[in-house]
Image (tube, rainbow over all chains, first blue to last red; front, side, top):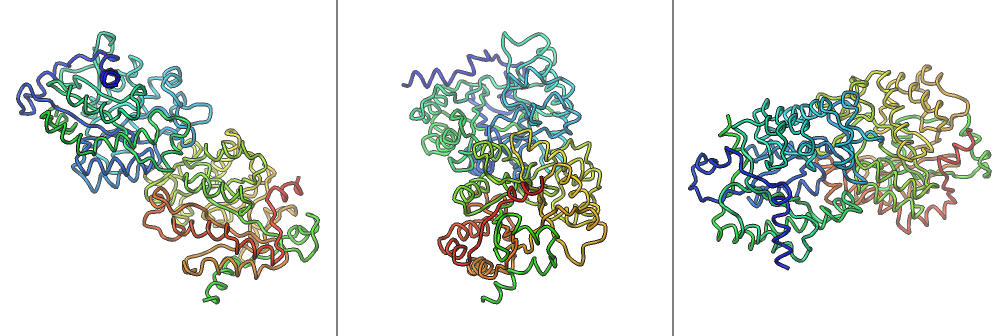
Length: 308
Length: 308
C-alpha cells in the first residue's frame, strides 16, 4: 500500500519531469535559509468555487495548515473571498486563473464580457467543461483578455494577488497559452506556478525570465491514492521532501451537501476527497511530520518580494 | 398576535391594491371549477440561487407542497435546475427574471454579454444589489436584451418555462420596465405575474392584453411576521382565502451553512426564514388547512394552456 502512495506522490513530478529553474536553485539562499533547507508551500486551490471550499480553506489558512491559496475569479463566491482578503491583508492569496467550468450543476462564465471572448464559451455560454475541450477551442487573444479581466476584477474587489497559477492546468497545455500566461504575469510583476522539463518547447522556455522561480517538485493527490491511504500519502510526501522548493497542492472543503452537489457525479476531487485533504493537513500527525522533517513553510509573497 | 399575522397576510394585497384582471374573473370557470372556488398557486421563488434553495424547492415540488416555482437564470445553480426540469417535464417551472444580485458573498452578472447591457452592471460588474439602485440605472433596451437572453438561455439548457415573474419586483417598479416585461411575455406566449391597481399608470395598463390573467391576491411573508408566528401567518392566509385566484409566494431553503453564507447579514429572507417557509408548507397542519378550506391548487401551466 505504501508503494502505491509513493508512486502517487511523485505522479506529477514524473509526469511533468520538473527541473529546477535558474532562480529556484538559489531561492533557499536568497530567502536566507541554509542550502539544504526543505522549503514548502502548502497550497489550497479553488477558492471562491463554493462556500464550503472557502470555509475550509480560510480555516486551514488561519491555522497555518495551508500557507497559500489561489482564487477562481469567475466563480460565484468571489465576494466572500474578497471580504476575507480585506480582513486578512497578510494572507497569501493568488489567482487560480480559470478557463474551465468543470462541474455539472454549478457553472460559471468568463469575467470578461462574453462578446469579447467568444472562443472561451461552450455552446451553453459557460466556460468549457474540460481542459481538452478548452484547449481545442480557446484563442490566444481571448485568453489574454480574460486573464487581464480576472486580475483587474480581483484587484477591483479588494484582492491583492501574491501569485498566479492555472486551474486544471489549461495554461500549461499549449505553448501559446503558456507564453500568454507568462507575459501577463510579468506585466503584473507576479510570480507564477510553472514547470520546466524536457517536453517544454523552446517557445515556452523563451518566454521565461531569469527572475522566474518554479518549484523543484509539485505534489498533488491523484485518483490512484486510495481513500484509506490519504494520510500516508501526504506523510510520505513530507518524509520524502528533498532540499529545495516544493509545492503541495490541496483542495480543501467540507464533505457537506453544498460540496456534494457541486461535485456530483465526480468522486475525483469531490467533496469527500476535499474533506480528506482538509483532515490530513490540519491533523497533529501532519504537523508533527513537518516538524520532524525540518520543513520550512514559505509563501508566494516571499518569492514576490525577491522579484520586485 | 393573530392580528399581526393577519395584517402581514394582507400586506402585499394592501400595498399593491390589486384588482382582478378581466380574465382572472373568469379563470375559475375557464378552468372548469365552480364560481366560488378558491384557486391557489403556492409558488417557490429563487430556484438556482443555491443548492440549498434547489434541494428544498425540489422536495416541496415533489411532495406537492409547492405547486409552482421560478428560476433565476443568471445564478450559478441553473444547471442543477435544468437537470431537475428535464427529469420532471410536468413540473411547473417559470423564470424569475433577474436584474439584481442582492447578497453580500455570492453575486452574479447578467446572462447577456456584459458589453450589451452596460446599464445593468454595478461598479463591480455584477447586477445591481438592490431594486432602488437597479431602477435608478437600468435602461429599457438593456433590460429587454437581458430578459430575452434569460429566456433563450433557459430554453437552451432544457427548461420549458410555464410563466414569468420578476425577482425583487424590479420589473413592476417603472412603467417602461413593466411594458418591456409584458411585451417579452406576450412574444413568448407566457403568462406572467402581474398586479393591477389604482397606482398602475395608463402606460402600464395599455401594454396589457385581455388574455392576461393576474392573481386576485398575492400573499407573501414580510419582516413584520415574528418567527414564532410563521405557521399562524400561513394558516390564517389559507383560512382567509377568498374565492378567485391567489398566489402565495414562498422562499424555500434549508437553514444550512451554504444558505447561511448566501444570506449572511440579511435575516429578512435569510436561511432561517426560508427553512420556516419550507417547514410550514410541508407540515401536516398546512395540508389540513388546505383541505378544510377546500383550496384547489393550480399551476401557471394551466393558465398557459388557456392563453394559447
